[in-house]
Length: 98
Image (cartoon, rainbow, N blue to C red; front, side, top):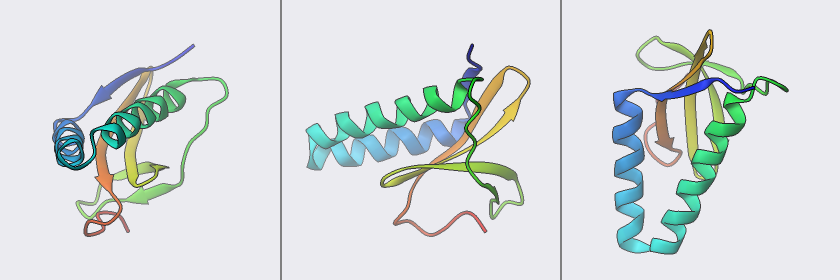
């Protein structure tokens, strides 16, 4: 059983921007990273076993959880039947979580 995966508008923008940057420099790496990130979303959406990352607070004050797919941190939260991806954020950028 899996939860439905929804990406917040900022997560979609992050994901698109990250892949656009990478595809210009290394198309093969861009494809591999895209697959790895989508696999992470699928793993997090599985309800059995439920594998959650640590709880964090974003700079905006939002509480969520974090999962790493090097070099990206996926920030997400859960609602009944839904995995909402809040941000897809490259670790080298200015931190957004405390």
